[in-house]
Image (cartoon, rainbow, N blue to C red; front, side):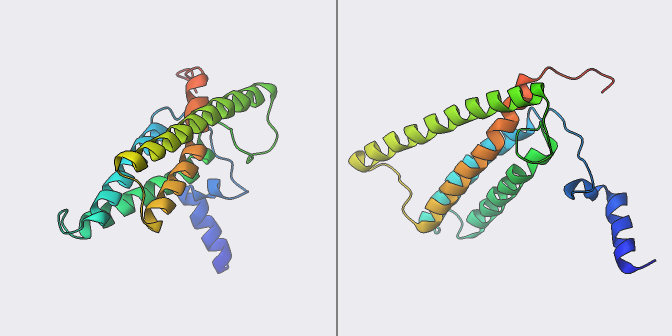
Length: 172
């Protein structure tokens, strides 16, 4: 047995082959995991932004590093969650009529929520400049804000599609 064959066998035994084109993941209704990602990202962003602005008061760089890692883990989970939740993305081949309707509804609702959040962020930014409230100031804060918007765009359709579907039977 060659080394590539052994590695293929190891990947198959661990179950990681679902991340390859040869394995098909079992789709599930992920009702609370996307919600955890959507809550973790702004919390980690806020703590990171607060600690990086005044590191002396918040325990130097250690606390910021912990929350940067937490933010990165949540972003990675947002990228992978589409593979395990309902089929709302481009991956996975042709969709039947029910899946197309579900994908359209979830995408529409998620787009509306994301547009509303961005509009509220713009209004906040306008008033924050007038009243001297917090605004992203460094390039790192702006980049993390962009990554958070991107993660929300990837995770919200999965969350919404999971809640639009009925709960599966006990046999499934």
